[in-house]
Amino acid sequence: MSKIVVIKEKETVERKQMMEVEPTWFSDDLQLNYVKNLLLSLHFEAEPLIKHELSTKLAGYKQQDVKKERFDGEKFITFDELIELLVVSKMRCKYCMKQTFILYEKQREKVQWTLDRIDNDRGHNQDNVIVACLDCNLRRRRLDADKFMFTKQMNLVKIDD
Image 1 (cartoon, rainbow, N blue to C red):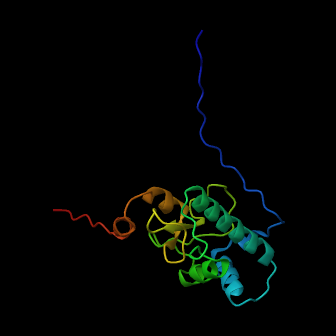
Image 2: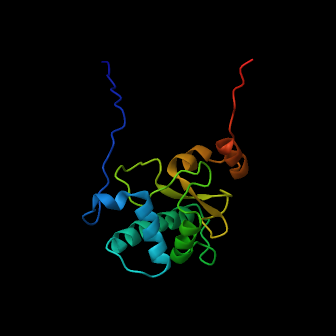
Image 3: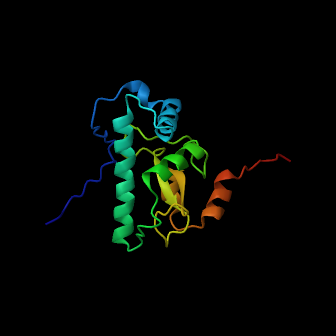
């Protein structure tokens, strides 16, 4: 008896949104403005969705830390600290400097925002996280953050003889 195993390519899975999303909300400039508005406590149409997306991801980071026994309630990044970090970073990945997004259509969007832990032996604490795109966060894994940043931001110039 022989088995046949068929391996398919990963499908692009659309994310389920909690509310109707206007196409303009996916604009990088608009998303940065949304985060700035949250920092200034200004209200806007997409506010419930933006808060939901940020809170959901923050809760996921808390679960990761609890599961790995790295959670410290005193040091874990708060929602307000997260907003401030996103504004200060201008929502750009610390490694590749690409614009990151809070709202995105594909579930595994490479430029969605993430919090990368500088020291992976510690939790998602305010003094231990930076904003990174999902792609860089996954590629860095357990490499030293400074060395990874150096390789991402290094420009190689080919000189013809």
